[in-house]
Image (cartoon, rainbow, N blue to C red; front, top):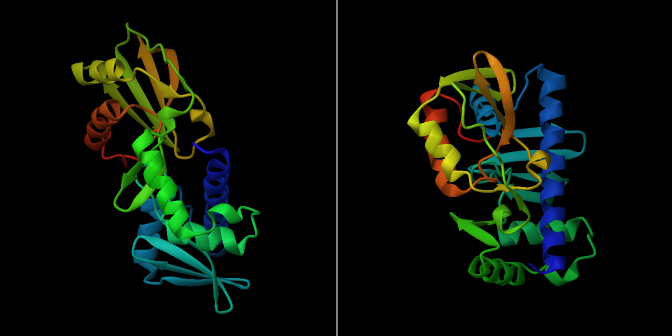
Length: 236
């Protein structure tokens, strides 16, 4: 991927993440409600029956699958919530609008048509994927590492936030291990990670991070089935 384009994507994601965290902090401080996932955010919006919020000079407008942030009558940030554990994907117009308003010194990729062309080219190169009109970095095309999962275990504990779910060893879990041939090297830097804790005779023998954008798709589909059986959210 072109270095400048990669930088632009990361700048956009950083801006969106900062805006999102500001809103989550606002909800925690003003209403004493903890939001740890996008699904919890949607639940909060349904319960309060409100889509517009004012944080000092900023107006947050949640709509459909995304959010717009305004100052006065100017839209300064726009995003759609992402696929799997991505906070947001890349919608070319919204990325261009956001970067332009933040003076990121990335004029070459401010134009939405150029962003669209670059995304399509990177999809062909295998460096990005496309889902429902948004583009995402294919993390497994970046640096990867190999996990050596325990072969002798009798149960798996999946930890997410303050919740723990225990599963006995099954052929499904063994299939997940076999399909997890490589993992994104910097998985520890990602948001919304699960922790997989392998146990034998009630003793922990291995602890590994899991994120559905950091593992091969074949492994993710199996883990989706496992998480569904525990009524855990697949991703964020």
